[in-house]
Amino acid sequence: MSQTKPNDEQSISLVTELIGLPIENAIWNAAGALCTTEKELHNLGQSQSGVILSKSCTLDPREGNPLPRYWCSERAPFMTINSTGLANQGYKFYGKMGYQLSAEYDKPYIISVSGLSIEDNLNIIKELQGKCHAIELNLSCPNVIGKPQIGYDFDATQDLLNQVFSIPELNTPLGLKMPPYFDLTHFDQMADIINQFPISFITCINSLGNGLIIDPIEEKAVIKPKNGLGGIGGSIVKPIALSNVYNFRKRLNSKIDVIGCGGVRTGWDVFEHILAGATAVQVGSQLVEEGTSCFERIQKELKEIMRIKGYLKLEDFRGKLQSM
Ligand code: SIN
Image (cartoon, rainbow, N blue to C red; front, side):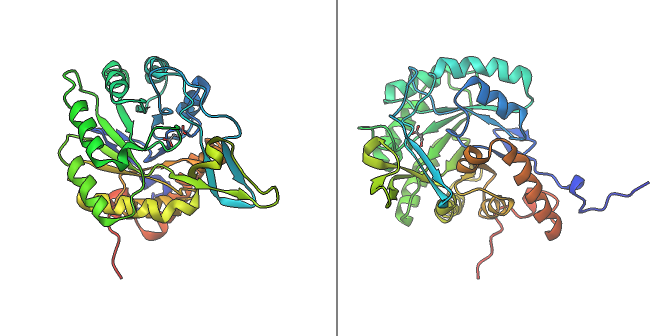
């Protein structure tokens, strides 16, 4: 009979706890990455993704921005640009999917919400109560023309959260999808706002808004919407994502989890996010490029890193980044 060594792969756990639930795998999709259609949501259910997270939804279905609106190239595999413009099937579709997905898959279903106005957000959040395990309210979509990223307007964020947390029927856990911040004062100010509310988690970060990637051969931008401006993702954003996870983890009360998102392609990337303080990690660009098999590969890589380092669970190194 073979004896299990303490650092065998089978004895290493990637379980994490979020919204009061144990989640088998601390790695799942970012909102927007292969999670818009019924088929894509089922694919996530069947994959090793720890959670099924929907595309950000609006009150009504949207076609989104003109094509091409996503770009990734072998010439620059470390960066992507997207300007989907919140193409989605409307909140009712994602609400209905909750029943189907919960019946078929033993993992939480989170709906990302990105209403086009405060009223839309309040109505959608009200209507989705009881239809999912949590809501991730998107404060940071950079791609809808004429709609600024609310997370960069501190007064508007305070006002929105005051109104959300005054919804009498609110009982579904609520998280926030944050834009990237770059100034320490902004971390202080935003953390002061978030700490006032019973927010379950924040996700750091959405794409770096309004970047521009140029094809120098064609002398053109690589996507069509907004004259080529779009959200930048991929490995290039990882240092910013790690800093946002680290800075918010230091400032938020311990009941609020921080989910890392940005530049996750390998097990090492997940390891770094968790070391910076992340409770779990989302995969965006790499999921779009590789498909849902990326979850199994990344988990395997992470377990191998943990085995070599002698870690058995994520708490063994979560938030334990050392200073030089
Ligand atoms: C989009 O639909 O344009 C992206 C959504 C987001 O970045 O929040």
